[in-house]
Image 1 (spheres, rainbow, N blue to C red):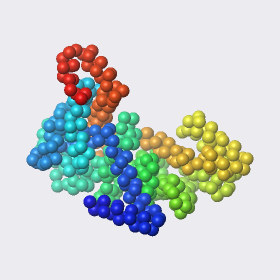
Image 2 (cartoon, rainbow, N blue to C red):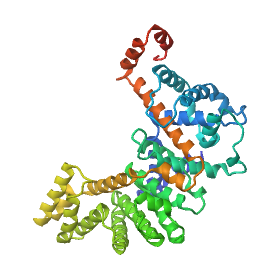
Image 3 (cartoon, rainbow, N blue to C red):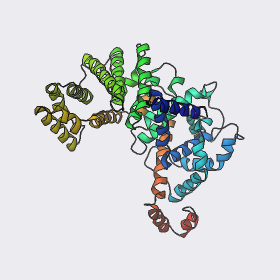
Length: 433
């Protein structure tokens, strides 16, 4: 209710002033974020997570547990059949039964904060052990802190999985509260991942807000080691001080991308300052990659130094990161620049959307190389194996339910049941209704 009052107040003040303020634009992004994660596949994922988390409930008189207990027991039985490390398919009957149960509590799931339940890790352990007894690791703990860590880890772990990916990472990011974390590397890396995801979903003001906070945090915490960040970006050759400089510059870079895509002239001017800061740091470190080339070319074109953009454009046009059509676009940019038509290069080919695509492609390529399970085990993160097995279970569950409940594939499910005989057909009656 307080958030609604704040939002309405901001809207009223902005309407009176006739200007879109930073606060108004940030509130609009928050509203868009809620809309972006409010669709069936994400709600079903939340349904599965609540089911697992509810298995660790100690007080079974809890109202939320009472409303959900029947469906939770059913889905947990199905999840227990899946080991989470393979490509198992859940049976048609189980998939349809779960979907029917999901529909019966869908509104409850939408309206319920999953964090009212115990930790996901505690739920996974209770599910595997078949007991509700407290887990020693979680005695005398700060629940808000650990569930924030869980959401943070999940947001990074599902980011590059083929079956879950960015929409699910966006949901997990929306549940994180970095301010609850101690001054540690996970906190700053989470802020960066959130910023990247928000940028990729056109939530530029939310992204800028977090990255600005991150830059300030990094300025105050120059001595904190960054082993995850080194692994994240593949900076194994950099020492701790160099890693800090490089990561600091990446936050400037993505804040620059946010500001570049914003509406106001002042934001575009700020973006150029951020890009300059990024290049200064990267050049000090001697790092050369698609991001450096992309920004070098963009800045030189914006500042009417087209001839200085050519070396970077040539390197970009040969990068394996891009498709043939994208390389052709880069070649066309080079032609425009050589013909002294840098304005056409910026508006027709090498525009804001294209340079944003360079950033996204680069980051996805970086993230796809990370084995988060291996990395977290190396860093001694408790219960890593259980968490990743849980992700595998959610993936199998989501895929199977989606496969048999979409209008285009319902007939496939009916045929499969038909092949297996009348007994299955009898069990399936009413599950499609």
